[in-house]
Image (cartoon, rainbow, N blue to C red; front, side, top):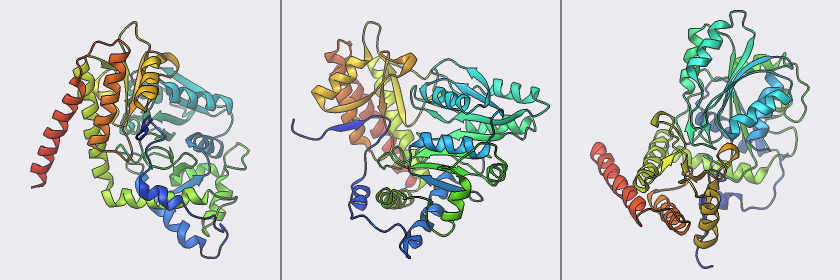
Length: 396
């Protein structure tokens, strides 16, 4: 078919042309004497995205799942008790990994469409007077359900209980797109990946750690090799890696970090909130509902949208793909067949979002969902016009 294929899944996201071109180069010597001139600024600039001034960041040739694993095996030991919550496919997978590593998981199951249960976390931490809990885990943005949780609230619960547990955060689909303040919020291990807010192909796992986590790693009880902090620190300190790095992805990362710096993190967060509100305006106009139960859970990077009873959301996704060359996210696990997902993160703007919404409208109508043609796109256009006008007025 003529024209572009359109990508609106929650990751991988669209790659800016500057980033794509930065990766289109011949292979290079990763042990060249001038390679550190390139790599050392990368480490410092990616720390700025995490807002981590005193710790350090590790860049692994892996997905975000690899960075999850690196955090657990370096900082914790088999038998360590950890507090976790499960409310979507990715918080589920993180809990499963913790159990496979032999951690003693105190797991709170929550309704899908909600997020980290701050009140229950506060109760568990206050009751743990012997400080058996070694780490608290929080999924900042649950991609399967379009839910964002309050990481600052988790830190407040730890502080109120005067609890020394480490704080681990999965920020794979939030960091670089949604406000995240590692040092201010006392996050000890923050995980992300290259394929979402960093606007790259999949293949780099980022782990940003605090001095407290680095100290804990020196006495960590897991065996480690590929993900070893010690090996990474030794090589990274002189600008290299303990194994062959993904050099072309690192060149793309340089271009991505430059784009992030040019726009500014705060402006990026505002843009994502605005685009997400446009999508939410469309959902309301269609008469549909989000998987996120209340506005406090709304994600600014992905919207999971319930289809009416009798409609299979997988068919909506297939229709959008085959008829309208547009990729949407399917429902996962408990919400399979019940929701479809629109990813609205990374390198995108008003017109791109309106294009996604037009494809969704046509696919919904084709699949028998009774909505008014143009209603969602029109609502989004109205919101974008109003919000842009108010933004311009504030700037003036």
